[in-house]
Length: 107
Image 1 (cartoon, helix red, strand yellow):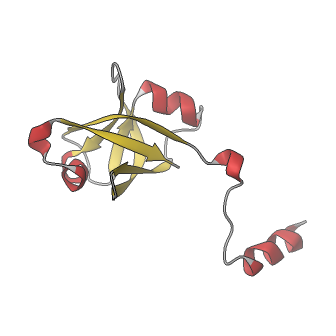
Image 2 (tube, rainbow, N blue to C red):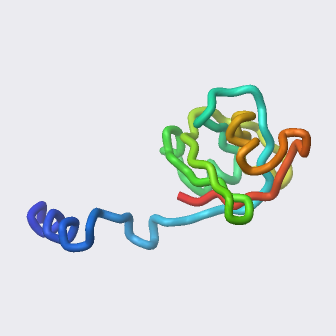
């Protein structure tokens, strides 16, 4: 089995998760004073990722601009807020003066 996986990995230039493991949620991103490259997952994002959400790498996109962050914290985000980003990561998606932006979070 390992040899088969290795052969597939070499044949296709690297392993990718099966399509069923891919997913995404849409909603609102906000920012808070936190460590660049790390973020807080809201309830909807935690539910979508399941119990092993902490430590997951996700991509947060607004239009064609994206930031990759690791989920290391949680937020009690209300409404359609799905993620709290560090200010510097939020600034890649929009001016922090906006406070919130619509995003798609994928993994």
